[in-house]
Length: 118
Image (cartoon, rainbow, N blue to C red):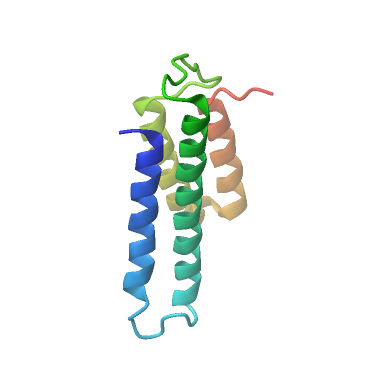
């Protein structure tokens, strides 16, 4: 599956979830409106990303661009799961050490994990 197709699928899923909430009691009123606006923004971002990817693919032509792009930063499933674990630890540490110290430690750990030393 291409990145554009994945973006389109996720955009449609998020848009459908907003449409599903429109029939709920309190729809478009506080506090449900905040989550509806956030989910709508996420759907629009995914759809815009898919449109940009398709436009770039069309500009490359039918042969495409077969160059391999090597990312600047490390990635992969280990980094993904470590980031998820850091997010969970961050949310759990708010009540233990407070929001600001937890945020500082989370950002420091995340930057170390992604090897951002500057």
